[in-house]
Length: 173
Image (cartoon, rainbow, N blue to C red; front, side, top):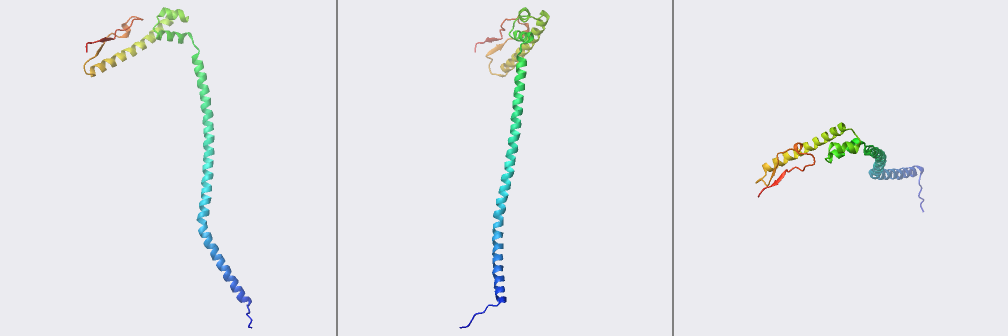
């Protein structure tokens, strides 16, 4: 039998070839795996950024909620302060209800001059509103087809206190 002899040089050449094939295979695998690994890393970074954003929004929401609570408390305090009835607020309410000067002064414990001023101011504002409504009604009637109602020309200021204005009369339609 013949003997098969392998020298160091041949053995080294085979080892280098095997190593070269192994390195080439690793390079190919790394190239194909790189985008997948990169995408995984990128998704992780995006998730981390979104997590930070969510934490930031939660903190901002908490701060805004605290601010809303504080503003609600302040609003309640202001309402409570306004709810304290002074003789003047009661007098204004009575004037808006149409009571006369003597009733307002006696009921609220204010002077007749103060009562006259309050009643005059609030009656004037009511009469201005009444006149505006009358003007709008007249304009509406003029622009509509056949007139169904007629509006009296007498403003509220000239009407006696407590009298109901005869502002609407029914026409034969």
